[in-house]
Picture (cartoon, rainbow, N blue to C red):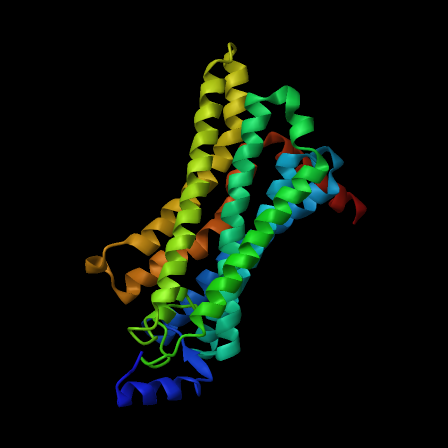
Length: 320
């Protein structure tokens, strides 16, 4: 494929890009500091919530079951996802700068794609765990033994690595002809694609389509699992039994709904309502809010987790 001379020159110059410019939070210096404080509060909440879940599950042997093993993995992924984007944004606001190095941008793209894909794969696995626990309880130990759980979690993480490697390698193999200003507070693939030559990004678009198909398959599996779960729960004769079954499923369903709704809106919102400020808010919704809110969702209705957490905290203060 031949390019005009000016475009070839731009493509040659793209290799000299050493840094990217992230979209700053608009407003005065006071508003930038407010953004820093807001993101810091959310980040600390995510660190505390997910850290407590990881520590509690690892400490209490009563929670060494498949459901809590997968929840521990989810907390690890949430910590990784929010740590990929928020600290750099906070640092830029505090220092009043927009810069991110080329290597830093590559790392953000890889890590964010990895954590997002691995988390959705893990949420699919967790829906299967709930299906087996409620619809086939007598076979639970057989179908979800420790080795099977390890393999399922490893597969979710491996899917994230493969997905991230393909997207990162393909995105940064494209020539950048539209400068180095990324219209987002972190290096997001769709925004980076806008910097590439208009005739060069179709390979990445196809990868995004393939990724969307994989997400759709995971979504169908989750829906099928929950259709079977709800049918089984409604056949439980006692109201207390139905309530207990729903209580173990609703947190996972709420997390899946939050993850999907924010991600779908961020990627499929009409361009007619798009603006830099709205894009910032929407991206924060799907990249920052879920990792901070997920621990709260899981701990509110989970009596076993709350009891173990209470024992952990009480034991810690008694030793002081």
